[in-house]
Image (cartoon, rainbow over all chains, first blue to last red; front, side, top):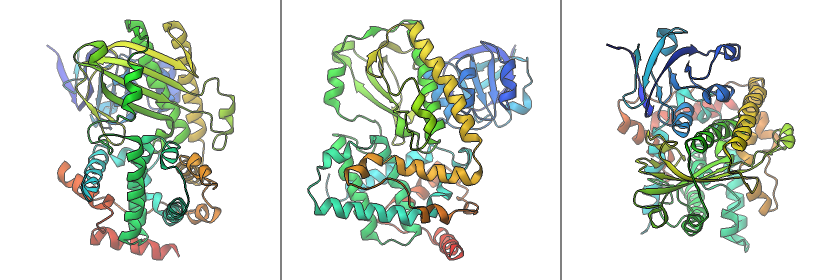
Length: 108
Length: 366
């Protein structure tokens, strides 16, 4: 049974599982691996390389027209924005499932 | 459209588009609070340009094509905001709004204000549908998706989050059933130009300048708004059936080659955003203002004018904080849309509380 940990706005449909990587600044980029779940306050252009390698994106803020939402739809990966506390509630290495249609993040 | 029906449509579409965004999330700040600093210079420049156009024999179609369609649509809301803050009267506001409407009429046959689509030049789109498209393999869709992720990032890094339409415009959804079957739609993406040495001298050395992607998607359920945002949570990559990509006019059809190009742009976006982030607050204010005016570089060039903001405009915000104006707390989306409808409608004045704030702000500015 999976436990729901976060709710937000489903900005790009699809489901993806992976390990949480919290990105706060450029110094965090080295820890990001292909297929990780990118968790951040809000994405910016410095994260483009990471976004292109992410299995899903989860943000504290943002709406359906925000940068992570637009980009994740283009790439066909799930995205949940406006979770308000993703960077606070999630920890690096946590295994989660992101449901971009329901706008929910589950702990595996 | 009869009388001023177009104005009702413009106001509705703009307010909805603006309502879809969260100004509090904008980076590095809420641009609505910087715009007024140079607003009167900007409004005067437009009133002067319109006078010049009306007294000369300028081809409106040619002028309309000097600016990206989404830039025309997006800029008018800021012009109306500034015009009201600086006390321009209803006739002057209407003159500007009518001119922008004329420009959009030259570009769009239908839905000029992007209430539910962004479809300039449908005849060209119909011709594009007849090009020899490639079947979208998962690899191609993936690489094109990443390219479409990297390109807006470089646009944002060069032209800020507020004016990135200068190098990022997406058109659609064009009904493509005649060539690709029921439920198929064509999307046209124009990325670039990225080389803008007037703003960023480093851009002279970029390997690529313009990207065009044509893609056919099955059963997309959303639509574009006036800001050129796609409203819907469809997975574009998985719904892509056919595609065609051009880099600086040359077709690129291999996933490997596209991977190299998107990788280049992803790195470049990060590097360029680093440059932007290194700017001081004073420099960011100047850069944002220059970028805004730069969007109309070719338009003003066609009128024999320089695009640059005057020094005295830039001097006005030197050493100053942004205006401390706070947009109201909206109880719901309807209220938010209603507020912005009043801001952008050239026929209406600002509400008394908003007007009072900006009167005080102008007084303090002197």
